[in-house]
Image (cartoon, rainbow, N blue to C red; front, side, top):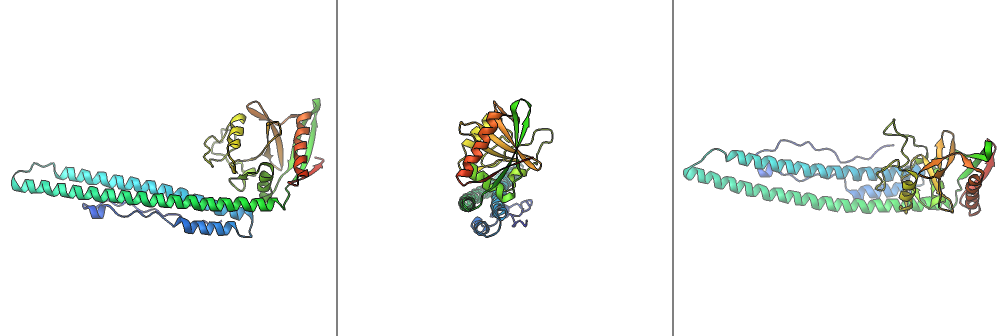
Length: 314
């Protein structure tokens, strides 16, 4: 997918000895309102949900890039100011006497005062522009997010994700529940139908990427303020319960049973496998009663017109 241009890097040149050359206006990148309007137009297009999610992601990327840019500009101004003050200090080290020395001192004081004023003005200008752009990004992201949620809700009203359920019977009246793999749009609609939330990313259900090959795959993205990507079951349920609109879930489709117990459908290659919360973890080998309760929950959603349920043989 083609990405729109993000704020480009501006090289930090060594400043000349002179406040005017030292402090220049910060370039903060593209207009967030323009980017937001473009993203909103794509989110409203007749193309797939993947395209709408791509527009949302690009606007979020631009926001993050702008924040990095603002921080770089703050650092650049601070470094330039430090260098200027050091230069003035170095220029005044040599002992000076008489009228010539006094004139030099006055000149340095005047230069330093002027430089400090211009530095403060540049920093103030940067903060004002950054605050304005930040608010614009927040507003535009809110519009695109709302449009995406509305679009998914409209599709969920007419498109029913299909759960083709397979039951494996094990010894001791134990069960393993599998469901056929869902499609891209279908998985997004399924999460909305089952929870009233939308995923933070389009291909969430079958994303098996990991930043640490030695650890278990993360089950959450670092979105929506989430920092712990591999929470225990109790922390996972608490995190998701506290998010009203967007769930940053990764590689799983979570659900809550009527009694408050959580379960999740985990991607296992060509199928999804049900895992029920067990203390601070999850397990995939279910009791006969647990399998009935999960199937009953899916059936209740079918009767409510939220999904289609089919029982098939493995």
